[in-house]
Image 1 (tube, rainbow, N blue to C red):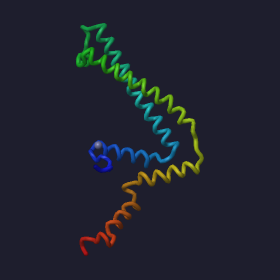
Image 2 (tube, protein in one colour; image 1 turned 90 degrees about the horizontal axis):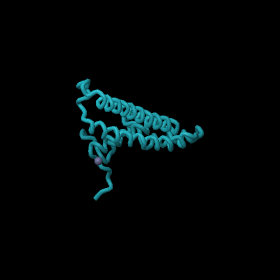
Image 3 (cartoon, rainbow, N blue to C red; image 1 turned 90 degrees about the vertical axis):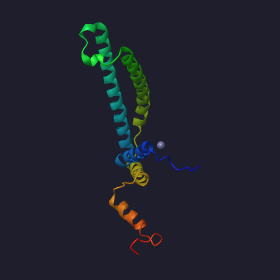
Image 4 (cartoon, rainbow, N blue to C red; image 1 turned 45 degrees about the horizontal axis):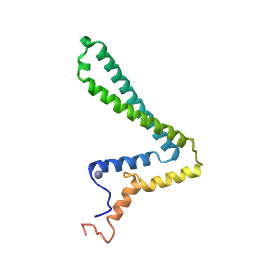
Length: 150
Ligand SMILES: [Zn+2]
């Protein structure tokens, strides 16, 4: 048994995305804006799809003979189930948004924002950063790990 983090493709994708979001949004303000935009876009998209499905459901029920092929692709229960699921998601997102508004109230000084950037650089360094590439090369050329040529 090891404490090594899971390395399956899904987890690796998550670690990469997690680090990228720290690297590209390294201040409190940027994280606030990013997460706000992320919640809002999630809600907007789910809301629009829910509206669309509700419209189709009512069209389907009101004029069966005029059904287009597109509407017929879904069964009523399929649409109803999806609407319920999406409405649940939207309710959760709404709660998250209410909490996130409180997070948004907080502003920190430039000094603290600098600390955020510093820590972000430490925990999620740019894998393609030239300093890091040089550092990696140096690590692989230490006397303990001699170059294959020698
Ligand atoms: Zn995993």
